[in-house]
Length: 280
Ligand code: SPD
Image (cartoon, rainbow, N blue to C red):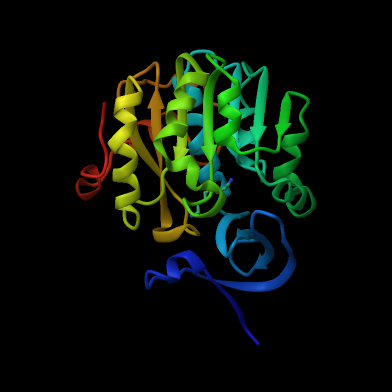
């Protein structure tokens, strides 16, 4: 019998992403969500949270490189970094490719995600064992309240705005993040797809320009996310995202998606998508 994964969240809207499953490897329910791990036919090993695809081995690089290297390459010397969510370790792995980094705080509300990823995705997750990484199993919206003028870069590597990540798409969280960034600091947040989630993006840009000196939106191409693309908000107490000229000499070696050229190109949006966002 053939086994296919249908992504639950998008099915509600009459759209489906189907991935053929070779083998079902693991399932557990934590106090926050259900975690499932599969071996897929075309995308390698992958996991879902409450039925929504979070990561596959085949295309995770396109997401993790872009949520990380765009802010890190925009900042002249990122030393202290906060990752909210990101319990698979992909975002932390990319952050640690920058030699300026002295400490990375990883605030993942669900320790179950980290435990599952250590077991089933060790090549990605083991980056979280680096001694520069400080682990906190907390709500990111609470964690940011404990720091003021502390971080150079923040990446909000969240799931979608239902369940535990809902609060990470609200104005109070962005206000607190702005406080815990140093002057010149930058944060990027998982900002959904301009094809499918216009209302969510528009809601974010109702308040982001009122909180940050500069803001913008860019995207990357990930075949296993709804519509095959996913965007990020760029919220800055320092550089104007549209004026940044990344230094090619600082680009970490061995990347597969990010380059100085891709950095600039990712901010160029199709005309229909521009109406959802505010450039500042
Ligand atoms: N629609 C799913 C969006 C998931 C984004 N975060 C994924 C976590 C990868 N580290």
